[in-house]
Length: 366
Ligand code: HEM
Image (cartoon, rainbow, N blue to C red; front, side, top):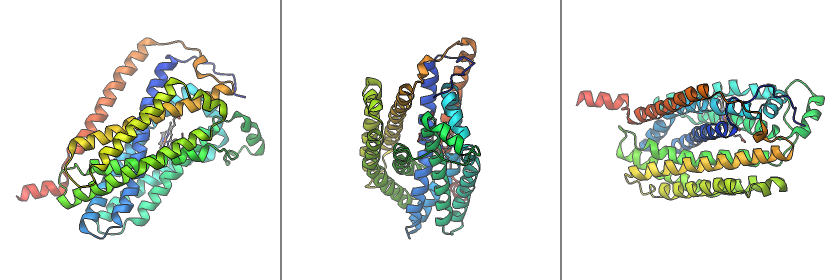
């Protein structure tokens, strides 16, 4: 049973909280998939023996610490929205696996450290394989912990037994058939975004033609090969849901989410595949990135349906929450939110157009 106590009413309508939560979550998912996929691309590129392969691996690796800042900062808003909307479920599951949940912090720090080490090793001509693997495993552990908690919050029926077993917070939930598929879906999304990320890195100034062509070739290949396994994983997630949840997912909203995921994914696949020849396709790269993001928006809407419908069948309807809107505060928040998003976009643009120190030095010498 979900606890009844939720003494403070929501300060904004549920639909507004949800829109903001889904938007920021789609951004978080995009950043984390770029991180996981970026590490995969570094491994793939660093395995090459040519000079271009090493330069391409370095170009991707240098972007990853910045990507991690986006993973973290874009993870905080959806966490706040999820706590406000689903506190009764999320607090309980977080407490039950508290030690593992809090381990996310040192794991993220360890991952961050190894991102810097990877870029540093590549810049000094050393092998980055071990540090990249460590960063990748740590990132995947964090993702696994999120999947564990986001699944446990949907299972009030196992909470009492878990708490009776131990109150140390050192346990994960009993096996749940939906948990691994949703984790696999997210990690396979990482492959697609790793490929698209390499295409975006190829646009950066200061790279020579061979490095650029290699990034486009490998990025295009990986991104276009990743869609089919991810779609299969998505279907796996659906097939593991209880029948009642499956039926509820046939509503127009969730079908639109699934459709958007497929449409965005196919767009990203096709446009990414056009890069394999190594040509100079600025608009195609932007199109592939937009397609990937739309696919994530669709997946986030569908995932939200899985959560809401599972909770509803267990007696917790998020739309039933008491709401006492504080429109003044909401207005200020929305203005700041839009300014914040604008600043993030501007930062990404500045980073994309920045010249490397080597290019600057070469320009000064010339
Ligand atoms: C290496 C770093 C990270 C990775 C790989 C990662 C991965 C993931 C994954 C795989 C999920 C989906 C879980 C599922 O539904 O099965 C997820 C959800 C989520 N992550 Fe992250 N994450 C990272 C860091 C963070 C950080 C630092 C925060 C917050 C400060 C955060 C906040 C969230 C939230 C709030 C959700 C779910 C929100 C919701 O269901 O409404 N993540 N993350």
